[in-house]
Length: 577
Image (cartoon, rainbow, N blue to C red):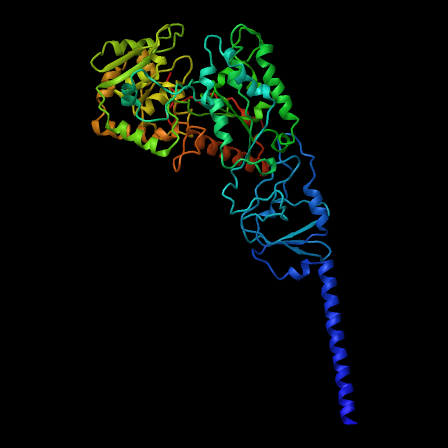
């Protein structure tokens, strides 16, 4: 009897146990299906908690795309500068785990920054403890991992209609009125490989491989081909930090600079801007993350009148282009332009070729104190070239003059140019048709210390590529002192101590990797940054700052493309009349 009762009692307990287990499982299942966040509320890796009414409201708000021109999507309130931020509605909560850095801005039509949550139904209650802004609810499609080496460096390249680039190369015979540009478009824009009847002469002057007869106006093609090998390209524009527009603006306008009216010169720029403004990528920052490269000086894209006799196109005066950044071989007075180096004759495919060239330049004996390679500019009354040539001619013991007069081909021969620069300690770089010269970079490549006469020739131009202390790598002589005959060039250069000259030459030789463009067909230099790498880095930093300003409500507006009358003044020096 007792045994029977014990068995019955045991069965009863087991029934109770199964009931409890079944009930617990059902409760667990209900909680999981209805509000998973309640199971996760105890986790808070970075102490960032959001309380929201409805997850769907947040995701819908992130997809709103009504943003006025010249502004980013509306930012959330400033309490995003907190670590423990509490947002409460109806006592429902979601805890989001995030890393300490915000997700990158998602570049795409109508998308907000990934660290912005907006909802009209959300009430805020904050306690500010921590400075880094939190991430929004993760969007796995557009989020970049912090471990991604390309985070913040992705670039999206437009696939433009062929008339803006490829068709220009096909019609290379007509790109310039007096020059057949087809040979210079070979080898991805590097031009023909340098050859000479006497290979010994070539080897003595240039050493190994990597030398080409590169045209000074071929930068657009070289840069585009380098960009095709850029390791952080993306086909998803929403991940891109910047958008590259591969329009060969210089080649396009170059074929119409003579004997064509303004409507023909402006046809391609107008059509391009219409095409760009209809793209979804454009509406994210209204073009302020877009950039293009100009293989001619920026003044060639800033015609200010509709007179057919006026020079160039009005590409950079079009409303849309005012929001874009132009990288060109010479900038003008507007703030949305940045100068990057002219292409030289040297395009190495290996880092060892660069170091070997630098070694050769350090060992050279330089019999001439200074040299000038160029022609006079009698049509420009303010130009000092005639005076520079005169001083060189009166100092034959110290100066080597290479006259680039009409019909002379000495300045078009890369071997001859490099030979002269290699034999000189200083290379004179007065302004010519414009402030800058390709010769600046050829002389640096030869280890020849540049002598400038106007700050617009270098110091305020190539700020990404040149040292911030001009006196470390160059000599500056005010052009007014030459005009007024207050200064003799040879006496000025002779007064510089030998130790100072050697230190300056070493800085110039160290600058060589920064002013050359590596061969686009090669994977790139191993550890050295070339002119392309530095230009891309500078551009990304510029866009990043602009994006931060816009997200903070500091829209650059008209200041993005502002005329800066003092841009060409000598840095740190008062303007001399």
